[in-house]
Length: 250
Image (tube, rainbow, N blue to C red; front, side, top):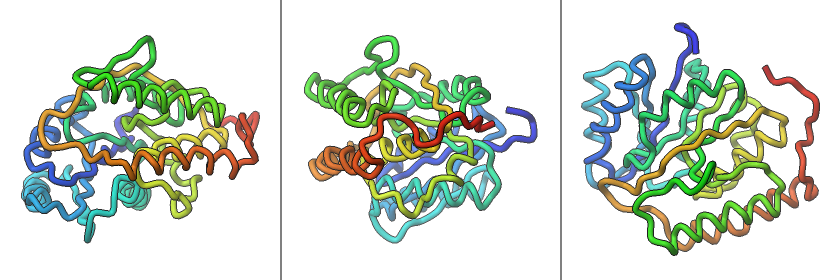
């Protein structure tokens, strides 16, 4: 990252009033020149109003207000389009609840010069998750294996949500055609980048369950993830390698 490069951290929010202030300060401590875009799904707890005040006080904080609870995937698509329109070079996905450690942002920036998409992996070099019940851990680890078996995508943590894209990747993906909205959104976006032949790297991260607020996971999100993997595989003719080969995306 050069002094002229612009990095944007996209943070979707829904009822995160206790987290938006602390997460902003933690991000800027690591990447002081970066910008943050909060995409708020009309939080009933007043999160949006808090972010508005933060944005008034800091030009590096931005907010987009959605009209209703549209979901994680729609929030990120909105953020990606905003990043493209405003000329950012690198775009992060990150949770508001500190399950993604802001200290890792520096490691993403070290990895992105040699990649087009960097994934934060909870399963690289062992299991790196804190405070999860065994059932949830087994579900997540099983989902990662399920994705690899069906798609052939060679990543250890395809459902993880801590990522850094070069904006050119997002420009080549047809964002309006992305169907997923829950955790399968992460799989679909990475699969799209992989099929286009972009360079994907993983770095190990430690995932810590949220400090405040509540989890947005539900059975509908889990079912969507189950079927979306097959949709992706069938859409690409059950291919187990990128369609685009020997292209140097630099």
